[in-house]
Image (cartoon, rainbow, N blue to C red; front, side, top):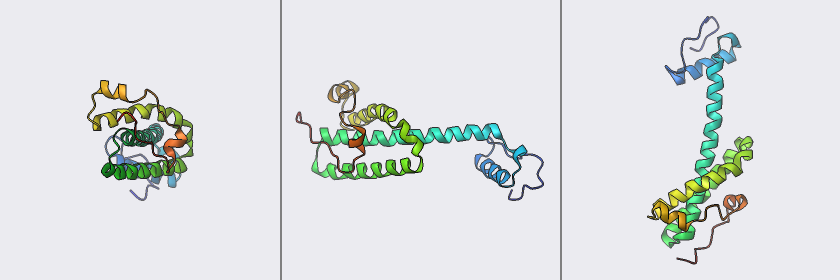
Length: 162
């Protein structure tokens, strides 16, 4: 597998063994054996990787919204520290993701809008609310700006209705 200099065809398919296929494609690239590369599958895998980064960003944004909503609607001292820790870790992970993939910044607003609804669902479920209840309890759009949700020092005050 390490020496593909004399190879005349690709032995592994992406469907048979993804890991082996990746290593084989990398070796072919390093050896400049471009004619042997599985170009179509490489393009598909690159697009899938880009999509996964967007999904990761959306999941992390949803986690932020979930914990901000729970802080606002169920401010318990014992749970508050854990929620703030989760927010700190998630904000740090988002910062790292955006530093490593700055092209994601252009998708941030759209993903945040979608992630807010995910966060509402997760927070509502954790708070023991039915869908109808959490749809009435939480606003339809985020009450916080992107700057606020990504700010390490931002935590919402407890809801007055509690």
